[in-house]
Image (cartoon, rainbow over all chains, first blue to last red):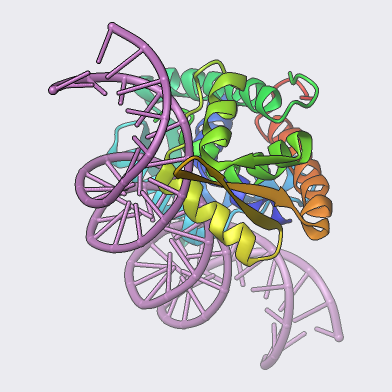
Length: 111
Length: 111
DNA sequence: TCTTATACCTAAGACTCTAATGTATTAAAC
DNA sequence: GTTTAATACATTAGAGTCTTAGGTATAAGA
């Protein structure tokens, strides 16, 4: 779990990619989905998640929609068009990053 | 927002892995080797490199040897035994990180 | 001789995350 | 029926890692 350092810079991409796949999600749902997909290896802390969501919204990559569930309020996030094209670019950069790293580390080629 | 963010947390591993492969290297040589292996895509800045080398030395993963080249002094770095086992662990964590990320992002498995 | 490459280094500030803390509702367990 | 866990939002201090910008000095090439 020392790989925590490696996660830096991946959170935005993860959020955007999940929203691209799922359509819309709320914050807590994202943490659960990530935990599930990573078999519990990756746990998003709220101190990282919420500021990032707010930042992506402020940058115009996400829009929100508040939905009342009884007395509790869920805030759903959805990609804007800018957000859509941003995902493609970011995932592309990530696969490129992996190729580059495998060359620099001289380990087997990836993806 | 290129892959620069993704590089966070990879510098220590890169240094250690190169030293594991090459035996001993000096700072400037490391920057050149990384540039070469990545086809110019990855450029280590000295502000990141030297503090990291000093930190790894302080932690006992590296030892130094000063060699005079005329009036100029080269500082060669070499892995300690602790450093050796650390490389294996870090590279292992990295491949694991890639597998995890490809599951979370739901893209093709890597490495 | 001027520029580029080699070779070391530090420091201020930016950015992203962790850990801690806070508020409040709902479901489940005892 | 009350405590505990899970759900659901959020902020903030501080740590760690990097970038940007600076500094010193030698060697090689135009």
